[in-house]
Length: 161
View 1 (cartoon, rainbow, N blue to C red):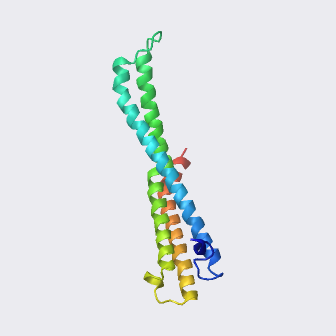
View 2: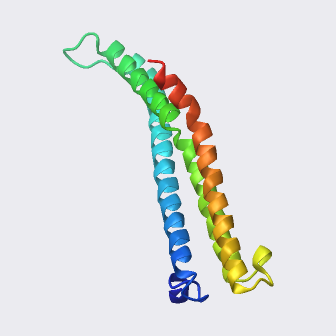
View 3: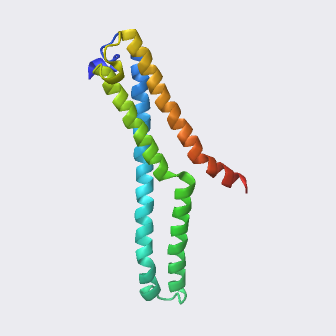
């Protein structure tokens, strides 16, 4: 692995590109994990609150607070609406899937290049280096385009207020 950090064993010209790809992989991996955690945590909370609503409706009496059933049911429902709204606004699921796919695609390019496989098979070092730069840049730009398209609706709806 030490040779990968210094350019995959392909010379000093590759080192900056290799570090950039590694940085992008790390960024997409972190963002995918963060969006996955946010999505799953919100969905678990929504499920738990949905389970509690009938319990609160039947048994949710707080001593000294006569309207506590209605309050507990309303609060649980309100939190569900809030979490669903945050999910729609932040697009945690879409971002998780998109970032994970881009991360794995970058890792795949890195592997193909390191093994001189796929589109890198039989290429001279300079040609393989340029192709790696082009293909990884293309992956990142495609992700940006998908992200912008996915967030287009968010801008339209939030800008209307």
